[in-house]
Amino acid sequence: MTQLPSPEGLDKAIHERARLGIVASLAARGKMSFNELKDALGMTDGNLSVHARVLEEAKYIRIEKTFVGRKPRTTLSLTAKGRKSFRNYVDTLERIVAPGKRKTNEE
Amino acid sequence: MNAEAELNAKEATEHLAAIRRIMESATQLTVLPGKAAIIGGLLALNACAVTRGIVGSWDFSAMSALHASIRMNLIVLWSATAAVGIAVDVALTVLAARKRGASPWSRLSQLAAYAMAPGIAAGTVLTLALGQTGHWGLVPALWMMLYGGAVWTASVFSVRAPGVLGAVFFAAGVATAFWLSSVSLLMVAATFGLAHIVFGVYLIAKFGD
Image (cartoon, rainbow over the protein chains, first blue to last red):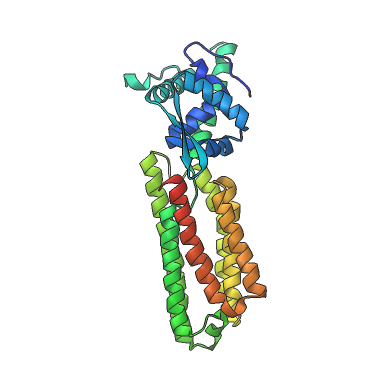
């Protein structure tokens, strides 16, 4: 996975491309199963697990394990903190692209 | 702007585009929302029941024996069924996109529409051509294969499930063309009717609607 240089203000937990994919997908869908997310992002089980754990430790996502019948099902969802960090991250990128743009929460 | 800032701005633009793509593909579940698939299936079942009542057979080729005006009525019925089905799909797709705050005419929607258009257009033209020459028996297989092919192709821009639906339609079309032509109307009911309903229920259970 490639990584952009980290200008100041960019959240390092989200900045890695795989983790950004996870957060962006969950921001769009709210909640996704592990397999859906894996398919959507073209990641392996191990890779997704590792990056999901980093985001869970940062309290950006919530990982829930349930059973559907006898089958275990892992569901990932974005926390309020994760959503806010993602919004800030996108704001920061937008300010790099258009330096005159104010933060969303300042508007 | 210095070289480093310029580079960062370019990369940030690329990053924002990547985020947009990821969010679009995550929300672009299918060009056929679950509810639209169920409604389309019910419309198709209704058209099949009416056709069966008028034709008196499960064999679509019996259309050839009908009086021209009755045949025209059935053509209008099937055209209206297709038009209403597509309109419902478009309306529900737009509503779902608005609910998510996304653009209903995203790049992915455009690609899916472009992928489906040739199959749908070819189906319309060939139906008229086959009808004119009295080859009504081939029409159901043609519908299934062209619609199945169109959905299959469009599924490249969506989740995997529509691809399976497309493959089912295509296989049913092949079976109808070679072995099941005597029950071709029943095959239309099984695919455009039941398969759509099952698919719609699956989509709602898996992704919500």
